[in-house]
Length: 197
Image (cartoon, rainbow, N blue to C red; front, top):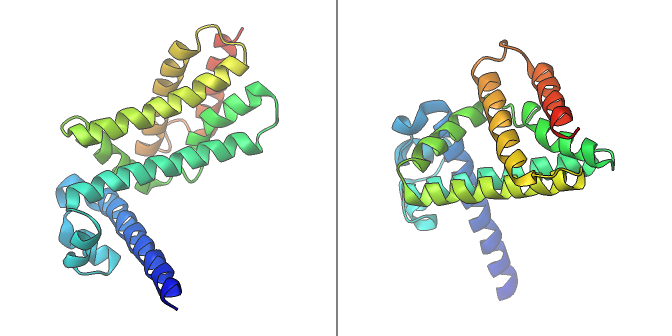
């Protein structure tokens, strides 16, 4: 009986940590950095402030864990886009790049959380490290897809395409009516076509 109880406690702890991470992302999206605090997070998660400190060393640890979890979620979305694409290398490359212009990546709440992470990465060393690792991983996977397409300078192309996708995603997130998701997809497809001639 004792092992079953420990397994249940472990699942419960994981679920509570996940709830706090989800509440933090929601607070960042709704209130921004200035309004995201222990009280707001715990109210959104429906838990007491003491519970936050039980699972995380404090709000800084929780925000860092939220950035890592959000990055992992994005990685899984991009990997799934490649997995369901046609087996052609260029189709997989385009699926990876253009997943940023489709749900759930276009969820308006993601913009608030992501811009908070970017802001923190400028002033907090731990957040800067999470940012660097996340983007390095994204560019490395993109580089592999570019190599599979025969790209000669995959590393530099990955940097350029990452910046392009980020810029288009940001503009779409800020003003959905500016040019639209399908136009963003077409721009990326045109850029890839020009780069891979």
